[in-house]
Image (tube, rainbow, N blue to C red; front, side, top):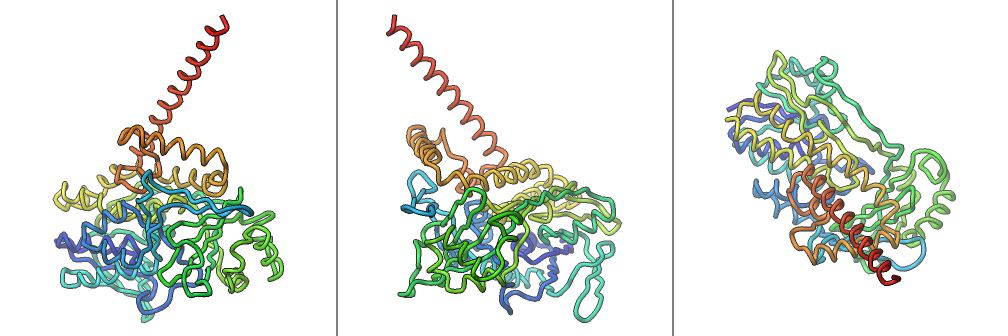
Length: 438
């Protein structure tokens, strides 16, 4: 049994505490915020999550999937909203039955905290309003003053702005770079319809692609939708370009005309909700041995990615599964397990980071084009003609646990084969035409 400090009681940290407690370790989870179960979410910061197979696989291993899915709504495809014209529903899977699941970050975090708290008899302790100020030795700032702590192992699960990573960087034990997009995000809300039901189809992830920007909306159990704007930070049609209420209303009536009647609090939401940053964190190594013992990073603290493939939380949950597996292999020797975890995981997280950036371009621009729709039709035809042999990138990422790097490599091979087949077909047609002319 090892005494472990997990810094961060967000999604990954709470789930990790459950995995570690199941292994018989004593776990203390330190969180800088107040207990979110006793207060409301920070305004405009929730970004609904799309929980898919990787995250569900991790939850099933702890018997938590059904509990979490009780607060989720399945989305079986994208609903594309053009500026003018008909809506276009694009299913995610060949049979139209597979779904990603919309759930609020707050609801999911609360469910995982409850599961961790229920593990108290197995050695889990949750301490809120503890902000990490020292790593070696462990020191936390609390409302009542400075608190020192001890642990044999420290794991930073404290998000993209990780304090644990910052201390390791300050000690010269890792390098980091952060690629910040010239885009930000802001949340809005679509209210229930006049009859109290959903104002739009709750079985879809709604997208308003507008070339260099977009808005998305995910359904909530209370019949609202959480909308997220992904706009440039500067220039025209950006967060910087809209000032007063009249300008906000004019812009939305011109760019998102169908949604304005569904947003009674549009101006207040837009003006009061903050603009969040978007970026990708690269750092290494994810672990070090300090005089106090092994220290590791997991989830966004090690490899935060942009949210455009809906894989941030899913990837963090899968981290917990991989770490649990390497602890099995190493007999719970954290000094050996943490480097092995990084070696197993790094290529995968770099692959999904790149795919998430590429998917941003697809979502904001390509999904509305006839060429994209034709490509999806061809892709589904290939999946039908070659079951199990041709599988789309989206299905492999969202509906399987195939390692992300293997997804990247498999899709690349599939595309190479298709290009080769297309060239052969063109060559055969050209040869036939020449022979016919002769």
